Image (cartoon, rainbow, N blue to C red):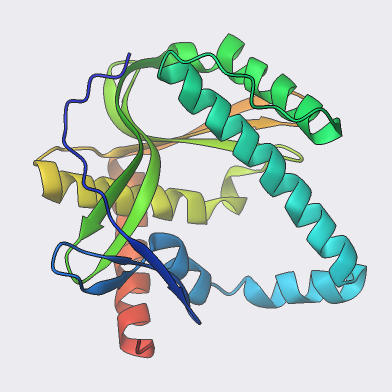
Length: 226
């Protein structure tokens, strides 16, 4: 299924007080897409409020659980799409949940992907930003940025603007790097109740989120020094 249609670069990552950065092909430090979004988001206050409400220990536990499950699902999907068979699930509750979510992806979701150009691929625009896309390929024959998401509960579309902004950032970088015309972002989500939902933006919505991403990127570069 993986065609290796494009030669994706290897980029070195570094971390600083703002978040994750990458070194571009001229060794310039450029922010990751998630670092831009995190620092330009108005959601920080609500996250901090939640931490105060539940306590740091519980907040850390919840976040680690979500991260552990998501990481196992992503690695298992990557192995599957590489035609590699390896049981990477831990022998605990998190591993059991992750395995069931992974199987739901395999049974009901992955079949929509008709071609994979690359998995966990590095994309960047020189001096501007970089990131690692889950999957670049075609879904139902249309070139897309594809992202696999696990969730405690299926989210509403209006709650996941950052997912679409991230996808648009990757698509625009890919289009510049490889002269493609990707204008579709697809979020494939499965929750812990094994409910699946596909979120998709294209055409006018894609342009709308691209414009928002560009404003956030400009704001980040104007607001921070590193």
